[in-house]
Length: 510
Length: 56
Image (cartoon, rainbow over all chains, first blue to last red; front, side):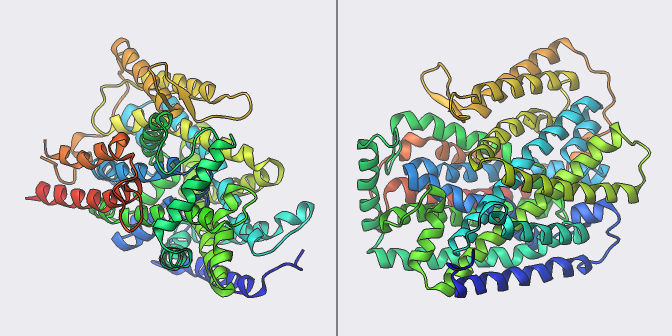
């Protein structure tokens, strides 16, 4: 089990892991407050300023899975994997316009989740339930994928185990994570994010300076990669691959970028990170500074190309980056890089479990099971749910093939985007009726899932019949919108709207 | 009208055929890659500019 372990790399890895574990527990005393209140445990008391928010959201959105998966796609088929760049470009102008409004109304009305807002705006508890259930459902496989990212780097350290022992390291890591998340709440990932993000920046800057130098420059890297893609296509290993997009890839590239951007801030973990900000201005400033992470992501994506050019042996595309790191760096720095990636799994996994726990507690448990819940009980249920959610993610890794977790995560994005009309249009008015949005959501969920159903695996892309293929999430949310709009023409909603137009403004964009 | 300024980089980013070419290269990097990487800070600067205009 340990005979092939790289001792130096493993030692560095364990050191950093131990460091953040200490930080995770210390975080409970940071900006000290009563952690038996859900607002404090699950939203850091809405007291995170621009810097903390930058580290927290950066650590939360650009996950370990991203660091592994985006270069994996580049490694496998080239240009298509770069869709992550337009995706992260279009997201920030959109957030600049919408998130301050959501923050303002949430702050004024005490909302902590998308479900809270939807209930307040539309006065429809079934729509609230739909929004909440979608969030919890889509988050589970996403947490599981963080474990996949972590397991890839632990495997690269040389750890190998049989049967249940195979998952022993991530089980230990996750139990520790679960304990300090239980204790410190959102403060734990916020504090760890400082260390993790700094490490990722060091890793990436070193990689894009040293590796191209070793490989003879970017020109050489792209030339070798181009030949490798051509060989793959010639051998019919993949339908299309190359340094630029094949004509048939353009539709999927654009729609996947747009759809992913629309879905991202519907996820509970993204909203949790944003609503924990201390002001709407903190969020605005972050939409200008968070693109620094997108740039790093672009460089990380290019690591897939470098792995191809270096000719490293990767059993699956997801092994490309870990193997490249081992190929390019001395052991101690490889350990540092792997620790950066693994910590990159802990921050989002913690925020995701907290976001799902907040959502479940406030929008499912409280309204439908135990309406008389007091503040202390609310925090307790949320802490418990955060443990259960993590346990669920571990079970996914133990008993499900990785392929299935990947498919579920893709499907999660398709589901998540279905609450976009209710949340985003809700920020600008109440033209849509609650029941109409619920109808649209149902149509979108069914259509999105049905479109994804493939013969061998779930597929994210489908032919639209308009001469190009598109991301299923986008197709389904279009149908969702049409249904919601048509139903809104018929249904007159008389449900109360507890928000007022002033609730949404902190300064008017004229 | 002013918020529309924000969406200019978005439209460029989504107009994939515009940058789906290899030449010209920069430091050996095909256009497809360096152009999109460059668009990230340009987009951030646009948000900054729009924010300044909005506050005036």
